[in-house]
Length: 75
Image 1 (cartoon, rainbow, N blue to C red):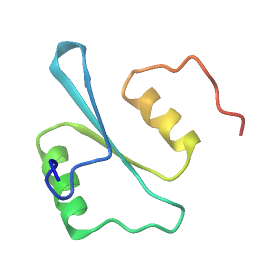
Image 2 (cartoon, one colour):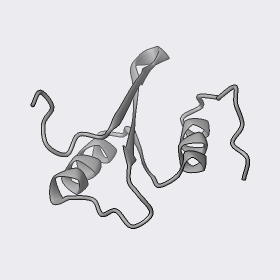
Image 3 (cartoon, rainbow, N blue to C red):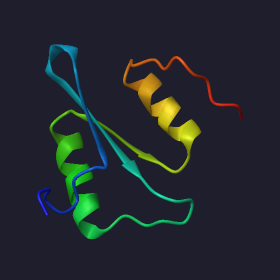
Image 4 (cartoon, rainbow, N blue to C red):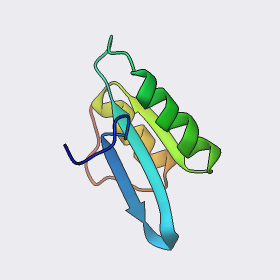
């Protein structure tokens, strides 16, 4: 209720109007058709999109987005 099917779990709006998307899944979780369609759409528009399966994946995605984190995840 309230969000279209397939929209990423985390949407980050940053300086300069940039938009970044993170989809969170468990180690074995699968993306739905709607999620794959959303991913393809936003990437075609030039936005960054990451599928993350761990906290470390999220930290790496934030780094790719040029957004640092104060905390570091122990590997």
